[in-house]
Amino acid sequence: MIMLTTQNLTLHIASHIVCQNLSLTFKAGEFWALMGLNGRGKTTLLKALHALHPVHKGSIYLNQRLLSDYSRFTLAKHIGFLLQNYDYPFPGSVLNTVLTGRYPHIPTWQWESQHDYEMAYQALQTVNMQHFTERTIDTLSGGEKRRIHIATLLAQNPDYYLLDEPIHSLDMKAQMDILTLFQSECREKNKCAIMSIHDPNLAWRFCDHSLLLLADGTQIAGKTQDIMTPFTLEALFQYPIKVFKQDNSVFFTA
Amino acid sequence: MSYYYPDKKYSLIPFFLLLLLLTLSSFLFSLLYGSTYISLDAFYSLLQGNATPLTHTLIYQLRLPRALTAFVTGALLSLAGVLMQALLRNPLADPYVLGLSGGSAFFALLAMLWGGSHFWITGSAFSGALLSTLLVFFLGKKQQQLPVSRLLLTGIILASGWGALISFIITITPPEKIHGMLFWLMGDLGYSYNKPLSLSYLILFFGLGYVLLLSRKLNIILWGELYAQSLGINSQAIHIQLLFLSSLFTASAITLAGSIGFIGLIIPHTIRLLIGSDHRFLLPASMLLGGSLLVIADTLARTILSPQQLPVGILTALVGIPVFLYLLNKS
Image 1 (cartoon, each protein chain N blue to C red):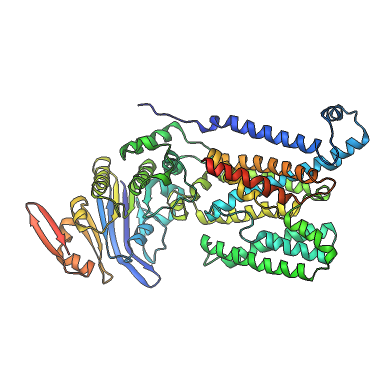
Image 2 (image 1 turned 120 degrees about the vertical axis):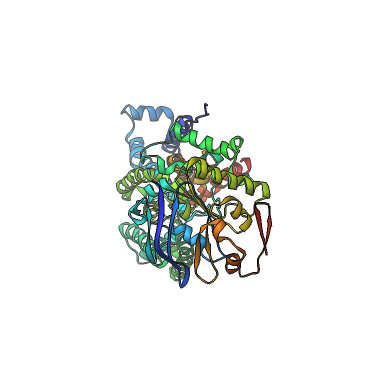
């Protein structure tokens, strides 16, 4: 059973509290939205779920085993991280970039196998970038770069996708493509994605679960439809939120 | 479904054969040319064991050791350059960016000022380089972490500090000793036959082996600390290894030949432009190109104005910069 569990988790950045006594289970098949104001600690929480930020109190388990008991290398087979920003001091080809995602699957003494190349090509096909393999990554547009990094994550093929604002500064179609992709990864391939996002409407539409980091330092977690209300969003954004309902859809606006 | 499966291992064989050929030619060039030219015939009879004693001495006692020193120095500097660029994730990084050459030069010049023997100058140069590495490490460290930006700033500040100390020494040095100091500062292979070469061979041989084992990790490290960690690499441990390995390489090179510039910056970039940044190929290719380029530059340095010798550092700059600019414009 694939399961990422936090137990009474408390996280700090210096003296600022990110979450307090958070007990949650992220299961395979679930698509989580992680919401909160800028600087509230979304990235920190995502990092902690990859054992990249110290836990103040409580514990995190991956498949009933403490996260800190895993080696970094093993952890990378289970959990992947899509960073908010990348820079390219030594830009390489698109194909080589995507192949970096295979790193945790290649034994120390070996070269990339045919299978690794296949995974990379398949991932590029999934994001519809298969014709860009020999392009240098810094020559691509912002949206294309994001797709390459997502392909790298798909090539890594972890059970958990930690997505740090995967759709920021993208056009509407690119946003929908990426969200649809991860939704189908969760539903059809039984993965679990945890994604920080600022748009409550997209979160409502794509994410079956939500974790809201409220402005007062507390948090609410649960099924998106149960917990995402104008009331909770106001506590989150510190701004009056209006809601419009039409048929089965709900629209939030500031 | 079938995919194009580029087997990089084999596609680069011609490139490496070419580099090996360049290496061999550079050695031949340096053995034949100098203040006295040795013809190919004379060289051939030397190989067969019937040469004049003069030729024998010239080749085996003078030119061969010097060519070997030049090769090892160039190879060490190029490797150090690749590692420093990976550590600092900065294309502008070279082996000296963290102030190693400054620390080393300060102590070497101090030994020269005191009239120390060759042994003392060499020893001081090596100790100075290691001391300056340790200074950068302990001053750059923060709560068991080694943040790269902090490391770079600490190194640059220390480098300018060493620069001030070096200027101070030169100011108080009597004029007749200045010439030797300037040669040392610009890099010179003049006294290579009485340097501890065998230790440098070992450092180069085992050092290359060790960094080749790290090379796949280095490919990922180029993408940044957080990304490397998320892919299963302990970045901190790699950073510390990189710092000390590149320092060891640089210290050995400086000990052999003073601070020769440009090799450690230009060679890694030249190879990157030719075959890309995969460290499994970048490291050995840089080693071969850096080594042979320094052998050629050194031969030119002792031939062009012979019998007068130029510091080889001048030649590496004059040869290296146009080649590099050409490649940069072509890409």
